[in-house]
Image (spheres, rainbow, N blue to C red):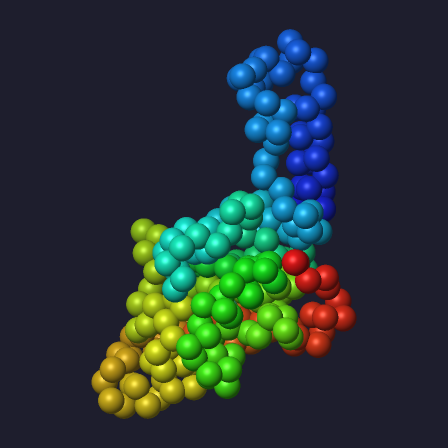
Length: 241
Ligand SMILES: [Zn+2]
């Protein structure tokens, strides 16, 4: 009964019952000073085809960074995305990763920062970094002309949090564009002492649990994982504009 499509249907039913209820019934459930639109949850066209991750598994922690100012752009980018959305099959794989992690380390949890990202937001990020040459820029933000796997809801940015909800120390923050964030340079930074063995072990744990469900990382961001290739995503899914 965990299917997202069922949950979406449930949502629609709930929304419908609020909007279509008789005046007495709606007065019992909702303050009657709210207009019909205010009573409905926020919806962005296209999200209904995706899966709300936390409805599938509420134990997974989500902190949608682009719905806050706490991101490399220092301003809010998501206004009509209220939660973490992914393709349903991708979300189900992530739930399995969470279970695998919890079996091995009951106190730890996945902490997800981003899932589906509208193409319009991708363009804003790309434009904001226009002082960086394209060859370098693609290491941090996919060129919107090609589409990011995030735009399809098949890429995930995440870390691991401890039992208090605090992210494990990865030696570089989320969206840190310094080379110390590169998984491919970990051995180098370990040898110089700029990364500790604990920080590298934390990154390895994240990669290991993600790989258990065939998510693979990229060489330049410790937090980013793809569920499939861009070509496969293009074939299988629609882009969120
Ligand atoms: Zn990412």
